[in-house]
Length: 218
Image (cartoon, rainbow, N blue to C red; front, side, top):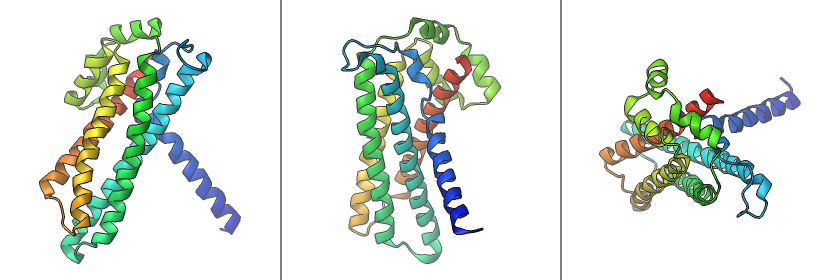
């Protein structure tokens, strides 16, 4: 394969990966809002701006999760080779940086959603949706999906966004402690790392299940 083909392949893969991000974190949920919002500078673009925030926030969130999984890989392999604390710190710094960007984006998302009126047609679809049948048919984690149902069955899309913001903030506070330990060449207790990993997984599945509902009613 020549150099040009390799470059094209790399660009294509990067483009595909970027466009997969919004499929997993509350994708399509901005359809639940009215396009125009008189409280924004550009009233005709409220929905597209919400969609932009959903995509950007999801992209940063998934990248942070990817960084943290790489860090866990290094911890796992440390049983054979020992842990390179400088390398581990670089990885965790990337996880923190991406999660800080996700939090900042979700902050803008919640603020805009809070002043943008809901679309009443989508609201009616969410309220009448058969959540039990959908969950069972997809085999989704019932506990996580119940949390999604708790918001969407009431049409509370704003609540979904606030939960994502709070989830990111909680994980970030835990990552700061991991980072502080690595800066002193100390590894956080494994049970705490399990807990962080669980928080990432539950929250990202929450976002994915939310996206799945909106894809179903689209």
